[in-house]
Length: 528
Picture 1 (cartoon, rainbow, N blue to C red):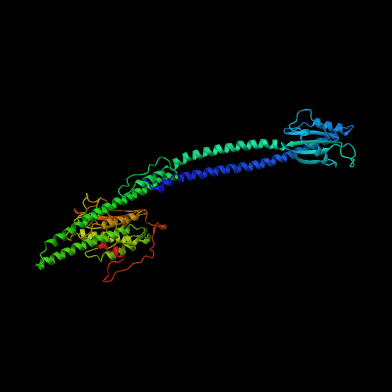
Picture 2 (spheres, rainbow, N blue to C red):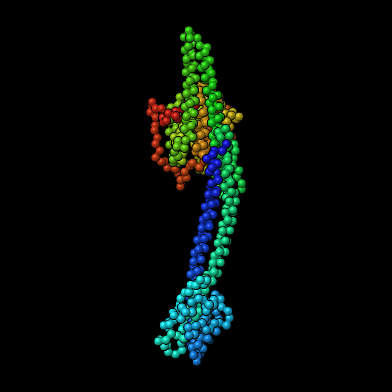
């Protein structure tokens, strides 16, 4: 059942918020842009009215000065007749304080019919001044120009007898702009609504992988991580996120499967010593000191084996920690020398001389040492005779190997020998390992982006200590095993083909030396 809080918040999804916010921003942006354009166009229209009034005055002045008129009324009549009124304009001739002359065609603005307009103009032009003013009536707002028409000298003692008047209906001029603004507003609203609908559809498609992620996450649990998010052919960021989440689910599923397998294997491994100890304790004769002592030794031996298993499990778990590795430039020859010095301290280890390899590589020397010592301990436990340590450089790939002279690894066991709790048959030394040693080697190789493998290798007479062995060269009927750590791209290229040594610390063991000890969780390499 869905969580009530989740049901309450579900309508306000990220998709709704994004589309809603973008829609509001689009609407606001459209109206801001339209408002700025409207204000600019309104200012231009008003300026154009002023320009047209001044042009009318110049035209009237030119007409009055063009011919010799008998009187000012005749000149005024010519001006009114010749200046054809424009749209939303009107022209008027005032004679002796009354509206006497109008154009021969109907004007959009009948100035003579505006209440009080003539009287206002007569009063404003009484001083023989050209007047530009605004008349605001009940139904119209008119921007007008009034200019006295005088022939000859001006008699300042009397008001002008003739006045030319032209005016523009400001409301009608702006009404055209207001109509365009209304059309723009309606269009902006419709396009914003369309943008909202398109945004919902597009965002639904683009964010569908995220919705599927949530649904898959709701259905996923530790019991089942098999479901994956469907990913189409799109290559956008959200689809790539879905691919990444699917990869994460793959890793989590693999980790869970690995944990289940580990628990199953550990349970199997622990069941045997527990069963053995319990069986002997149930059958021990407390009155027989010999039986008690033998049972005690057997129980201690089985408990030691269980302790080794726990130590190796802790070591393997620690290797999965990203902070457990520190890759740095390392002198391979010096590292092999250190590994050989430590390997000689392993009980029963007989090492051949190590041939130096001139190379620098990027790796974690401590972990590589741990892996190589584990392989040496494995060779000591399962083989007889000298053990060879060496390295090969092929381009930028580095291959470290441990070669023994034992019976070899059966072909059917080679693909699985590095898995947990896979054991070979020890020759003459018993097998007290936990079955995790080679699995730890594989973990170390994988953290270097490399691999751990085992192949057949020639034994006495055909081995080349510290070097490579020709393919197909089998001088003896028996074959040993060569365990390899291949680290691709680890070798540092050096100009001239030489690899001068770097500051690599090397400790030479004394008579009582023991393998270099680090963390207690990493002490199991000689026991696994």
